Length: 606
Image 1 (spheres, one colour):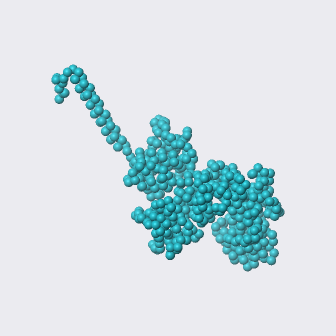
Image 2 (cartoon, one colour):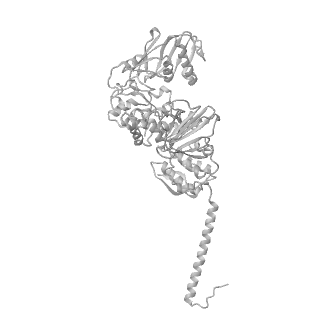
Image 3 (tube, helix red, strand yellow):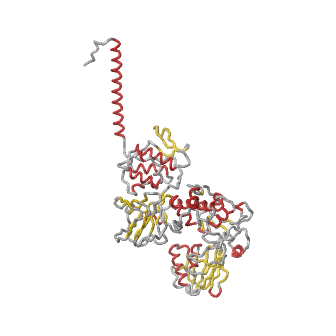
């Protein structure tokens, strides 16, 4: 039925016609919007686990590490809000992500994830602003993420749920990144019984996902015998602080604290061999615990800052590798095998050194340098060759004098060739007062060891090193035939340094017995086996020292008469990388941490 218009004037009929046209257009627009919304709803899809891995492969240079990463972590085929938040926490960006952008319950849609991904890129890339722009790829107009002129990720172009790489982005590291540390606390990984205490309110998450509130000063006892050989990553009890000052402590059965407090999250796993404790915390918090444990807090501020950069670089290097603690879902442990962590109390000056060098690491030829460090030099930095390292990857570890007139400091004093016995002995005995560490007690030392009736102890150390490092020990009979054991060698006969590197470290030491020889072939093996003789070590300040290792492998044999081995040497540690006492002496002379680092690590960039 048509609209009755006979009662209206011509002007009114014209106005009604315009109104009808407007209503018609409004209806068409409404229908179109509804249609578009329905189409969008039909196109709206949930973010797949495989897609998240593909997105992350753009950020990380090593894309392979994201292959099936989330599946291995126990994620399903689709990502839910809680899992995404947990992943952001592991990356160290959860405090900066706008949680209102997505729902914590249920799965995450593709459209919900994109702004989160954009925030992640902007946060993780601290040196450059990430922007979006449109461009044609394969004839299609797409939005891409760009860093300066480089494409680092797609925003809306996905083929078969997988993104193909356009340009790899160099990996960036941040002190907010999470590191997992297996806690030995001076003992074993495994504990038959475990006692813990918290100093603040905590959340306790059980292996089945059940969450409990924990009050301040609560204690926990883990003594059950029901343990599995290999628990899955999620099969653990988690203690998470609810306040910034929350710490977890090891205690004995009566509740007496036996450790420093641990920041971050504590995870307890049950293995058939005992309980294993893993500490998850930010790299910054980890370094707070490493710095005073590895370098005295009384050292100069610039030396502490240099140590902070070394410790940070070292942990990131280890985090990139698969190490022994990986079997416990950890990347490193708290022992000297990596870096000593939380052995000494945190110190404000050490925390400042960490903060003032935030995110700074050393690289060599584009890769993170393994920034070895040690206590005291013998007056010369040792070379990468003492560990048979490759010059292409370890060329920053060069030999050189640690002297106030060293060529590295603009002086004229160059490194002598110390491979010959006479040259090394002259070096150790010279009275030059220009060496930076001349007043440090380990700069020179003497060791006396009786080797009468010490064959059993010495050969036990030899056997241990043969197992741990087969190439570092060669056992032969009197005819030169190689042996697999030490049972028929007999009594000690003679000690000889049979090889030395130009930097001063002994490369080979031959121990002759009545019926054969033992050849020791690296600095650690030599130091450990000689320490089995229980030598008396006298430092240059006349104090005594001991330990499971000889102070260094930079020494010469003074005599071996009357079944007593007398040796004289210098330095404390392997001698590679940064000398901590040397760094402190440079800081006293006004060098800043960057110059200190460039002195000890040749050709690195920060």
